[in-house]
Length: 382
Ligand code: CAA
Image (cartoon, rainbow, N blue to C red; front, side, top):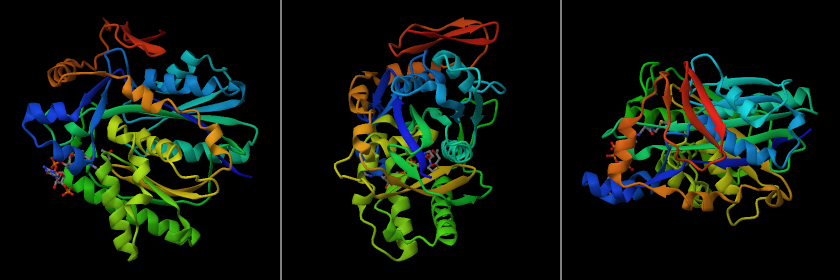
């Protein structure tokens, strides 16, 4: 039985910062951002946007085309948890009006957990083929000002419906996995920005790429030439190029840049969306120029700390007619541009507090975070 991604959709934020504005304000050569990091701009949330509002927006579009009564689980993957106890997915479940007979859980392992959720969903459908699972990866990458990570910030959500006989991508059995205890990027409970060992994180990512690939080969005996396109987690798109080159060197083969090029279109503009980044890459790749029907994609998911997975999927015949996330470029174009000063003011004004507050009304997205009453986060439809 084939199991995989039956439908998917995305959402991002109200605001955008162009990295040219950051370069000018900080006196940095813009080439460092565009070429050195492979980033052009990043999404910035309005005060009334968070991982729940982005997730609900992506999921509501997806559910408008599908039968919500088949959904048996909602798996919400995020690094940007909004509560230590209650899963963000429960807020989304409420906003979407999903049936009560649903299991809802949050997954965490830095940027990797979207893939853990996806594989858990696939395993559930293998046992209960009539069920469908809503997997949502939603994150806001928020780094300290003047840190190396600041130009690699971003925000976005991808919602995916996992089902038997999928219309878009069959997830193949057997993947390569790799866990190594490394402190390359982490965010303690009392910090709204991560601690990052930048250079260590690059090495940890590339070690994980090779480790997960080698495990995939050991499990499946797959050849690199069996893979038609590669999609890598993209904390900044240059990272995908580095990992791709490292894999080629490891295997002693040529792997052209064209094998990853199209997957980077949206991440250059969204910035890092942690758990969602790989899946923004998938949407971009599927919307690229090539007919990928019947072709195998190799996906590499990395989460600092670190856990990673190399897995493969077969693009389904007729997938292009089932790709409804065709509004991505348009929604990226319609973000409201901030000046560098406005961005920094908003960044510095961020309060991750549960004291009573009412948020400024800014976003015109379908759902907004309206504030906190008696320590309870409040959401409303726009
Ligand atoms: N024109 C063209 N290129 C230029 C340039 C210019 N004028 N100036 C610099 N560059 C190039 C540099 O040569 C360098 O290229 P290489 O990497 O190919 O050598 C690149 O731009 C970056 O320059 P630096 O190394 O000097 O950049 P930096 O030290 O300021 O920061 C970073 C780089 C460490 C990755 C930083 O962005 C960071 O800390 N990011 C957050 C951590 C991260 O994303 N790590 C990735 C792996 S971890 C992960 O994947 C999980 C996750 O999502 C966070």
